[in-house]
Length: 265
Image 1: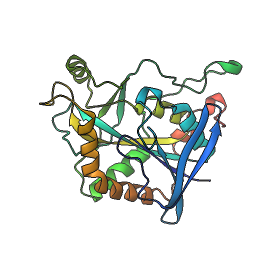
Image 2: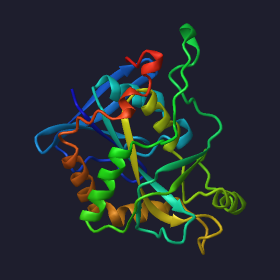
Image 3: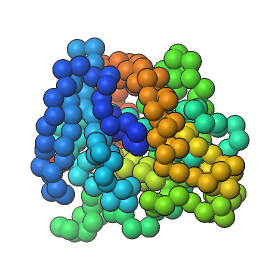
Image 4: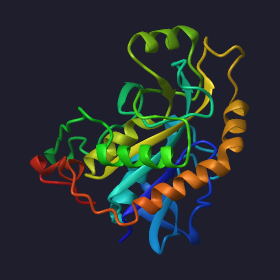
């Protein structure tokens, strides 16, 4: 059984902070999942590249259900997700880390649930707090310890992608209270809650959003920022995973589906 998992986003494809790394595959009802597993402070941890190692899977085609189901089957209790984001908030600058506490969902064509009516099973989970409060505190504490400029809250706007947003869309998201914008947070966090796992994310600001940035947006800009921050991010993740190595927090996330009979992969 492995308690901890890290899901790597754009620019984060190798679990450089893990030792004795092995790659494995697991079959799920939604397809096969490839993952890496290794050791951090003598504890086992899982690493999963959301877009695959060669960034061949666009955000709207990530097999979110297979990924989360696989982690649950492996015994994971806590998921730390990384995302690259654009900023709508002048206080959240390129190179900063944001640990979001809220979400605005503007995705359109994704499957959001394991409970899709088959066998007459439907579940309605509470997402008043979409991210695990315990894991959020841990992410913030480690970021401050590692001297990152870190924002301990913010609203993550999830868009469909893979295109970048228009200037008008960014203006709308800002009016609605958005702080950062990305393409992968939903349905990942929803499925993790259905699977009764703790889930929190840290977002690296890689650019200012459309209409705020002084230049047109590009994928290269995102990857250049990730590459520049890679060593510092690796140290940060190592701190987080080490802090969670003894994770056994019985928080409300792990009981999110008790009223519906629980979740068993």
